[in-house]
Image (cartoon, rainbow, N blue to C red; front, side):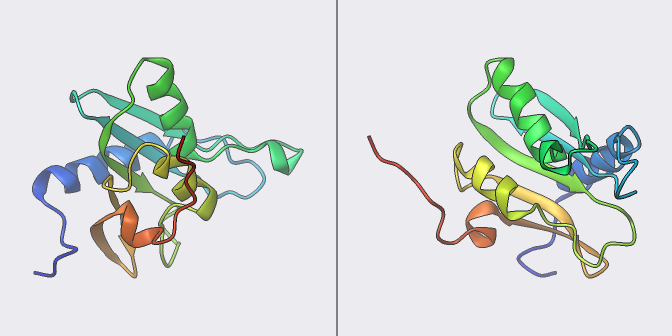
Length: 135
């Protein structure tokens, strides 16, 4: 078992993201993505990618879940499960989502599919030089 091997709870989180993925709106790319973001208090927030004919207006599932969570008052998160299209070689969050999530802490555990295996690793491993402002 590698240090990236997910716990049973993390596997369940990934499976929930797979179920959420079915609600994605991806008529252009045909690449549905589902995400489930877990807040420190145990609440879970679901998100899907929502595409738009003006491609730049598309929102990713991870950011969709995070925006919902923040709107509900959550600010600290423990894990996010991300399920991309089953044909994807690797289904980690895109760079924009990594930076967006980093705003809330680099210790967030990301559970996703990599080369046919489900892995769990901290966001800091996926975004080692995150941009940050200190005020």
